[in-house]
Length: 584
Image (cartoon, rainbow, N blue to C red; front, side, top):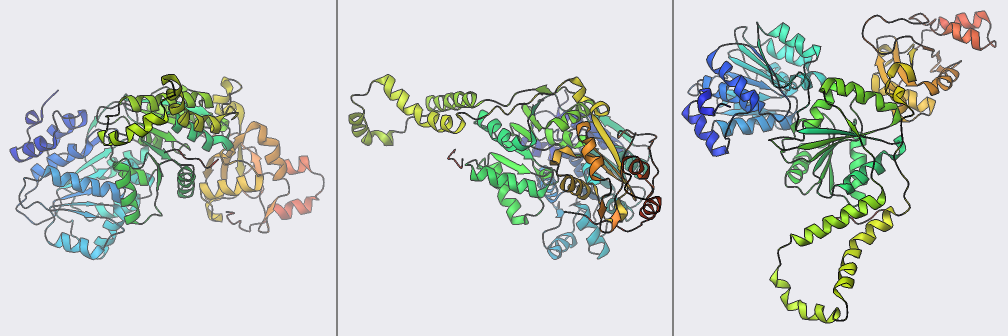
């Protein structure tokens, strides 16, 4: 492996690298830095989170810009304010010996006036979130017409968050002859389109395979009923007494709810999501970095700014809707040469997603069992024994020993040990005694097969009716009285949509939507031959309000032809439905 000296960095940067304790460059740094230092080129770099991407573009940018100029020459776009601040702080550390360097962070939730004032002082490099950057450009508070280097960091995540139009608008204010460096953990087609539309013959480097998970992380999944998901989470936490983890939920509401329940049950937990103020987010992250919080419950968006190397576990309390997002989640652990574990809690209807993720990350999941109560009691007991064995004696206790010895003078050593350890053992034993087995089994390998054991439906509502995938999923699970995980693969188009359930729910779904009316309009549902695959899609019915009419005629003789015709021509719109215990 090369050294930083061999990569060709100048003395000022090498001194900063020495101060920071860096010994050898990571793979992405070793591949990217020589290219960016020696050539004026566009670059696409694919590497997982935690592989040192900031230094890979940060060192070349710092070496190439003119520090003695007050003109903005470098722009770095990142998806979240946490990541924006993290990159800014790292760039300042890298450039600590570059006299006159001014790196300014531009992000929402902070004074735009103060940020504009910092830029006006002369910011050679701006690190920004797309929304705030676009706002400052429109107010003419920043000038990026002369930048030489533009970096799109975590490009896939920015696009997932809906920043495509903002990025396009921002780049339209930059010169055509600049170099654009795109760094991403995954390479979905949206990222490929950015490279195609905004870059000229970019060089490409890949660390590992595209979308592949790092070898430092092992992947496990636990199969439970949906209603037992929270109990499973607690058992996994209790099985790992020294856990330092990030727990991922899909929504802000679920994130807050899970964190509150964990705190109520005596765990050191905290929530991180978009509804928190900047001060609240800073406080939570500070507590997490200081390990005052062992279990950080977060949404995918909020977690983008987490830069902590010692995370032992990532727990997917709910799987992400996009399989590629799992790569980002699991990348929170197994960083800086350490190993980590990514756990997934799934219900039977989600088992098929495991296979999809395995294909993307090119790693196998190990199916494991949720531990029993007695397993947890044993682990907690031995954890306490090891903790006591490793505890240094505090001699401030000496004045109290005489009284303590008197209290136990008739107690044998064996009885004393039993009494001491029973304090902890009894607490867990009483809690877990007679608790049920949370594990369930798939009936066969066919449960992994999306096509064999699921039904896909066409429904004649879509974006024009005010739905997105989440609101339509909520509507369906509410009216059908199904669990959240029983409705999946929701795909919303302009005037129609698709969704899936397990095949054993098919009769219930079709029966319910036979003669179902919502807000004065008949909602038609029909089984579709489309299974959620890309390519041509076939339907048993038509793509308009007539869809499903044939099934209703077959299953119901209650309506006349004129009633059916009236119903099919309806074009109204639908609306969206919408033992506390001491532990630590």
